[in-house]
View 1 (cartoon, rainbow, N blue to C red):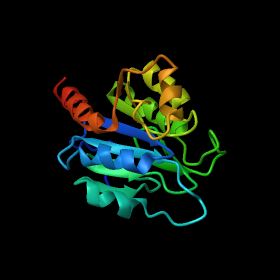
View 2 (tube, rainbow, N blue to C red):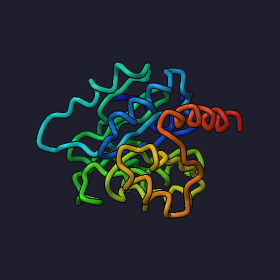
View 3 (cartoon, rainbow, N blue to C red):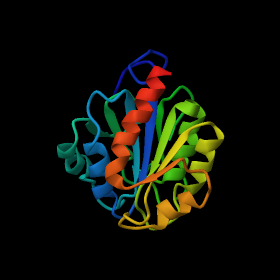
View 4 (cartoon, helix red, strand yellow):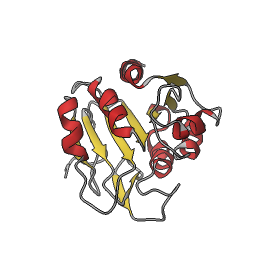
Length: 202
């Protein structure tokens, strides 16, 4: 667990949220593989996972990125250059002050972890310094969260449904009318880096 106090400064000047479901592993590889350890943002991921078995997602994603990939822990404080993945059967949320929390609350959009609790809770802490990404998936998870992100000044990026393995999640997000960018998975990482640097230099 990271022992940093929530109010101690670090290099992070933005925070990136990522939501994905069916087909998400390949999109996550593309996104995280385009980022590097010098990224001045933490990355929080809600990927729909099977709850019946221990996940191998950290081992699967780690070889594809120089960012440090780990399962999120209760009470942890996210820091730049790290990827925090919601563990199986837990919602990942962000509490006041930016501390991570794990919840076994009700399923959201038939999933736990789900995107909406992560996006909605994170937007309260990070406001305009939040960059939310919705990747491939079969349902509408993330759409409600996107609205909250935009209401607090954050930025929303969506994987292009035309190139996504499954169009449901990207399409639902776009239909909110609250999306800033729509692009193929392999173009999201350069955009994220540009937006993070813009936030750092603001």
